Image (cartoon, rainbow, N blue to C red; front, side):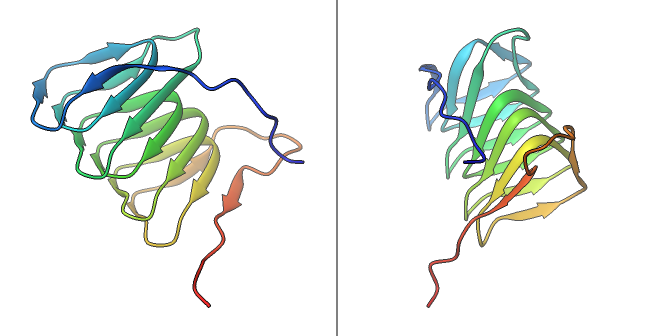
Length: 132
C-alpha cells in the first residue's frame, strides 16, 4: 500500500459561512473555513495540522498546513507539507508545493505544481473518474 494509515487530526476551529476575516490566521490541529479570509492561513509549525476549505469558502492569501483539503477557492500560493486534496469544485490561482497530491476531475489550478518530496512513494495520485 502506498499510503500509511494515520491518526486523523481533530478539527477544533471553524470560520463560519457568514464570517469575513481580515488578517493573518494561525492555527493548531484542524481548521475548517466555510467563510471568506483575506490574509494568510498558516498552521503553527511542528505539529500535525489539517485545513479544510469548504465548497463556498474563499481564501485570498497564502495557505500553509500539513494536510489541506480544498473544495472551494484559494487565490494565493499553497505550501502543503504532506497531502493536498483538490476536490472536484476546487479552484486555485497560485503556485502549489505539495508532499503528495490527490486531484479530482473538475478541479482547476492556475499556477505551477511542484512536489516538495522525493522518495520511494509516488508524489501524485490520480483520482479515479466515475464516468462510465
